[in-house]
Image 1 (cartoon, rainbow, N blue to C red):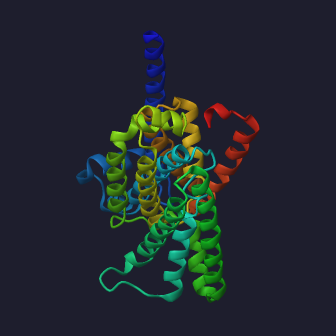
Image 2 (image 1 turned 45 degrees about the horizontal axis):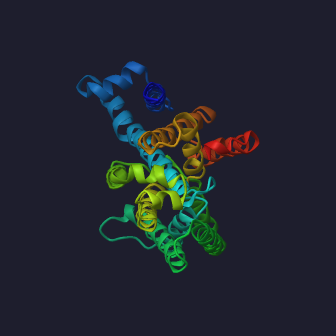
Image 3 (image 1 turned 135 degrees about the vertical axis):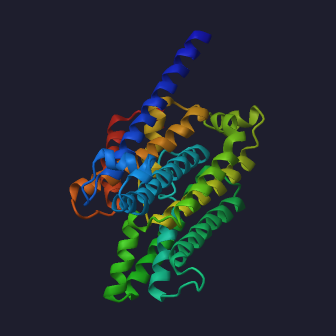
Length: 342
């Protein structure tokens, strides 16, 4: 049995290393591609020996492209990890921060802030992200409150999430209906999701949130793996299922809120990345979580590269590209019917 386990773990680690290499290549490509034609040498010089790069190249790489690439990585890792947690605690292959209404709530918060024009006196740039964060947290609190009343079962949490999704989508539509054409344009652009919102102000916020949530979940990795076998079996080996579900739910809310509030509504990453990761490395959460984070980062960074290639000189909002990638993959999953990966 031990040689079989050793071969299995070796194969999973090889997949993890290959995925990391793919992400590294996409990072370089994402920084390289853009309206200003930079060479690989320019990019590498600006990244690793900035004193030897020209001032123009430094500004393009460090102040414009690098924050967008880092934001794509961090948001992808956050949504990929949040998706795995959601699907684990709810035992539902369609569970994700998007399908449970968190993204819709963030969109409503941002739309409301844009419509009213209210800004924070000390940091105006933080107004829209903060409004999105607050509404996302409110949506998580609503789902948690309704589910807690009925015992925190996966079915109740999913139903409460769907109700929250429709509630915030309706509120979002109302705000758009009331907005003037100019304001409506700003709202719709935010809702598309765009990396153009990335800056050195908000990148550290998403990074700290992701690191904090990852550290919080480290002690529970074996419990999460046991939970995939069902509530009864997990409880039989000493897992406090309800407490674990509450903790993971709070972590998912924080991961989603920090990511979506920074770049806008991003769909399908939290749904698709966990399925790809599960196909490659299985259910062991020690490997599955980093793999889901990497596949989420690859999805976002790949979508960023694709958006620049499709529209040279401009940038298609990344939320549109992730949806275009995610929908065919979801159809593929349904047609393939590999339930063992769900």
